[in-house]
Length: 233
Image (cartoon, rainbow, N blue to C red; front, side, top):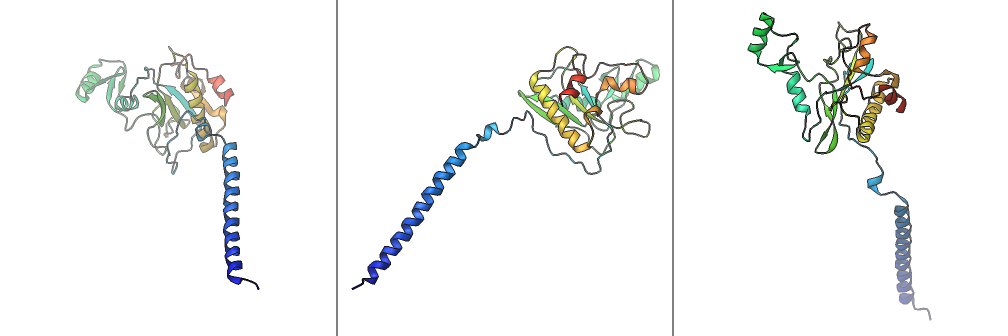
C-alpha cells in the first residue's frame, strides 16, 4: 500500500535539498569569479580626480595653453592666493590698494599697472594640497580668459585658449613623475571635451612667435619640455 503522506514529505525534502545544492554551487562559482577580478584599489591608476565642469555655453577653444604659477607649490591650497592676486590692484606685480594704484599711475610711479580681473585668469589649475595633487577650478568656461595676450578669446584676440596653470616654479624645479602623469591625464580629458588634437597644446612661451612677437616669458618654465609632453600623449 502506497503511503502518500510519506511520499509528499520526501518530495518536499528533495526540493529543499535541490535548492540548497543550487545555492552552494552558485556561491562557489561566484567566489571563483570574484577571485579572478583585480582588487578595486588597483582598477584605477589615476593621479587626479577631475571635477565636473560646466561645458554648456563654453567658448570654442582653439588651443589649450599651459602655464606655471612661477611660485613654490606649498603644502596648503595656493589657488586661493592666486585668485586673490589676480583680483587685486597690482603695480609692477605687487598687490596695492586701489588708492595707491591710481596715485602711482597718475604720477607714473611704476612700469606696469594691472587692474583687478573679474575672476582668476585661468580656467583650471593643478596643485598639491596636503601632498595630494588636485585639479582646481577657476573662471567659467563660458567666460573669456585673462592669461595670455592674443589667446583670451576676446574681440581683440586672434585665438581663444583654454588655460591650465600648474602651481610651481619650473624654471627652478623639474616636473616630478606624479605631476607629469597628472597633467597628462587632465590634458587628455580636455582634448576629449574640446575635440582638439595634441598639437593644439602649447606652452605660454609658444604663444609669442605665433603672434609674431619676441618671447617674453619661459612659461610654463624653462625646465618644462612641451615637445616631450605633446609626444607623450
